Length: 217
Image (cartoon, rainbow, N blue to C red; front, side, top):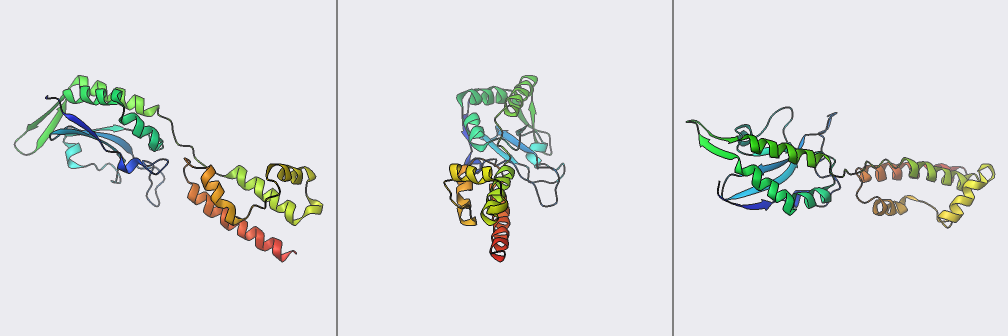
């Protein structure tokens, strides 16, 4: 196989902590994620995505082995994945893998085949992908617990733990944590999965707490 330029497509991997992590409404399991290596044409194209198909459906060209899809963890950090597949070492692996690719016409369809060396290289790539740093799942549980205690200290100073109030005077300088301050949480939690959902839940919880405090004044 003649030497081809390798094109790395990463546009869909930018701007999100875990761009390959996706689940349709009602699903229990995440959609499969993969790195695809497509040697057809004048270049070798490398991309990464999650499957848009539900169940075991795959694209026809993949079914006919015209491109190699290699399993990738869906929760891998986008920035880490971009760095990995853009590295010279990965490009060398892709080049070696594609040396074992052959395309032919069977009378009905174009079909691809990959020799043993290519299959071995694909397994090595999958193993490396499985070891990439994962994005952390952000629950916000500690943050919620601490600030509910703080709200309790504000609303019920007589019955609150003095140590709790002292902690917040020391750590937070007496700054009241209100829904408008939640943007700070987003900044501090950059790179985590699910921040938007957590912030929405926190905002609703804090608004309810504030209403209760006002009602008890």
